[in-house]
Length: 322
Image (cartoon, rainbow, N blue to C red; front, side, top):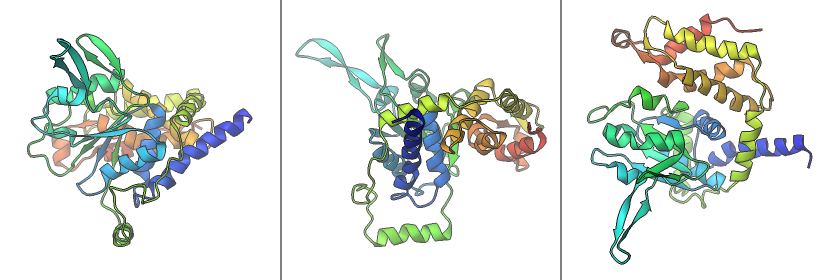
């Protein structure tokens, strides 16, 4: 098989993930595509939506379609760091300590309601997210590859929560939203359930592996070779710099955010069948890549300002290269 045809087959397998996940999830195509982009970039995702919009089912269906392991941690106020990463356990028979792996040792980790646990436990994920390893007794233990954290937040219930600090928010490649479904989509959900759909049985729903970890690795290599013109790089920088001087903003997008926007643009361009990035690709992924990296002034929030609104104005104001 020639190299171009191999790349095309790999792209087709990754694109097919959307259809396969659609056997379990009605609507929310943007969230599904965002998760695929994150996998291609080795990035993590903050998934925001009210309870009951199938966030957990989405992660399980994606893991099934990729034939990857998945795990779930329900973050609660009494959760300890060792409950996430694992801990040393004393073995009385050998009179030695051995390491018992925590749920973080998986491919797709759903960190459910991450803002319900104190900062000490939230920070237990930082090393795993950034270094893809866990340090135990001073010794690093590598995590599986791929490893992606998909953390969820409830956008309407803040009592008893601990907002994620900016340093941790900045480690998420994308912030995706899962809104309530449209009327037609909600009818589709109920129709499936009336016909016997069981969200706990993905096999019965017909979800099958359509891409492999090897194909995902090949896709990542192909994404890394997507061409970035200097004018597009300058456009990305100008967009991020413009957020820092916006009137409603207290803290704008960091250089890490600019790097994330570049990586997401490359992945989106490749999924779209191109081997180069256009300004339109940058615009398409700018909101999910940047919205969580903008901290608004308190008075602006009281007046109804939003990060997406700031980004809309920035995208309209910054000249597009031709």
